[in-house]
Image (cartoon, rainbow, N blue to C red):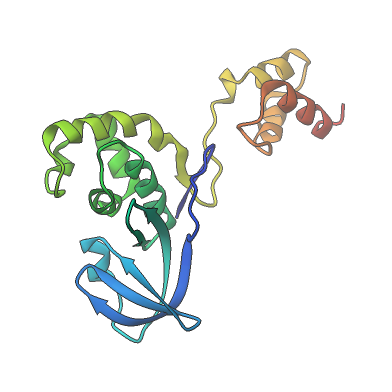
Length: 202
């Protein structure tokens, strides 16, 4: 599972758990406490869904349009995070974003985007070559915000200003790295140094 780090996205309904009471190509209706939620799915996710009457957990994104509200479902939070990034790109609709989000392993997507390979988008409806290139360009930097759940984002502390400042104060490198890894990486340098010194006992 993956989550967004260093950024957030507004989403009123992020998760649902209930019983499938209807399955129709591309969508299902989930009974959650007596309320039926219509959830749209990618073709790949729909094929992997259990049969009617089964219990199901899905991560969700409530897409607010001019004339409608639509709930899109995802098997993992990784897919939800990727969908939110793609959906934020101008000119990319929810259906295309939904299919892209279910493409495959995030590492594979990152690799292809880093290499500028747009071929993996060829079979996405509504995505031509120019739009694919735009998606690749905009996602190349944004995908850094998606990190495996249960893991802290890798940090090159050697180039961290707080790390360098603490080195100059005479603390051992390993001790500094261990301390900084406990702090939010979005914290500004001065506050990071202050908190690190507190943890280091100075």
